[in-house]
Image (tube, rainbow, N blue to C red):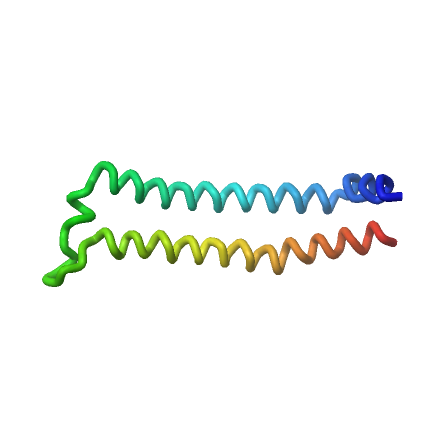
Length: 102
């Protein structure tokens, strides 16, 4: 019976749409996150002068707000994935579940 259920799910077109959409969105967010993170690492490696330069008359350098941006961006991009997962992906999963169980 379990194998029959798996075959029903694999044969459902909504399941294929869910997998394709979720994978594409996940990989897109991964690429953007890697670009931001490795961009920061490359900036540290190759332009230390920029990160060490002061932002104004104070003691803070550009490295702090740029590093904070990377952390905040990580939280925001995670929130974007969770929001879309809770709205679109969970609805598709529930529809597949109802259709297969019927």
